[in-house]
Image (cartoon, rainbow, N blue to C red; front, top):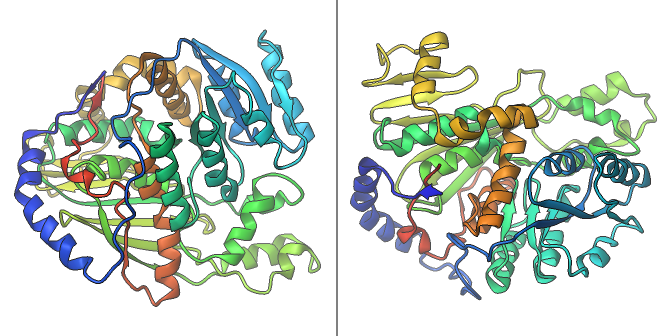
Length: 458
């Protein structure tokens, strides 16, 4: 179950700033096209009818999808009905893994890139898990929902503003969930931050910082098949934050984005695009396809600044090229304290000895255990055993299945998928226009003002 009540501090802040935020929104939107009218039910808080068993079809079972198949088989009440992948060895491997676990052999769909549509015609599939190249995510989610299935997609959910709106419209029209599988919302430190924020321990929230810094040049070795075989072309053709959600999703939940606050406008800058060309020159022969790319467009580091309707500031960074240690940054700052990740540090009135110095290591671990998120207290050890990025993948899927079987609202909804993903295409537009400010669409169509923040799952 979930406690959706915000802390007294955040409730006071919300009421105090709401009038000003509404006026600011009106001024900012003068002369601009209105948000498109809603075409169906509001999906925040939507609970689909209970499913006695969750019958799953998978589209894409490569690097991420195969892990989802394996982890879903560890969850009670799940049936793997069908698997679709257009790479025969990859498809055969996941089919064999299901059979090896003593499960009935899933039906195979591997007759080309569009064969997933044939799978969607089945009446014995309740949800579809999508782990394909980015450009397929939105269209597959839309097709799945129109076919009567709940859609769960890897990140990002969409690559254009138009696709984000299509996801929202189709989810509302069909009454089907569309959830982006943002696993980082289920990490231990992210859940801890959510808990102390909801308890008001950091005071009124002012600022957040998030990142996805992950050196992935090695994926360029995947030329004929694998993530690098398609993802590398995105770095060549586009310039923006192509993968915003891993850092952004958790801090958006802390801030109550789409639930009491929302992203209002943003701008972005990009560094020079040097690292991929240098890597290609060093690692591949001159006639290799990576060395035939005349210009790599995507900056090695992209920095985005977002302003929210309640006036908070947010920095989001993305770098998958530079030789730099992994980080999601994960900083949340309030009037009483600040938590920062990578490494974990805290300075907070009433919790730490000092506020002008970080509390780290053993002392911070004591605080984290005291304020551990109830979900991690309940499921943390099982999640670690379940695996996937320290257990966050398993915990995410466990929550999905639990909510579906108990008829509860999901932790993330289509508005989250759209708002977190849209930072990608908007950052591209901003960079292409000398870092011009870009309005972030209100995918809730104003309903964020009366929607309570995401609560503490227990």
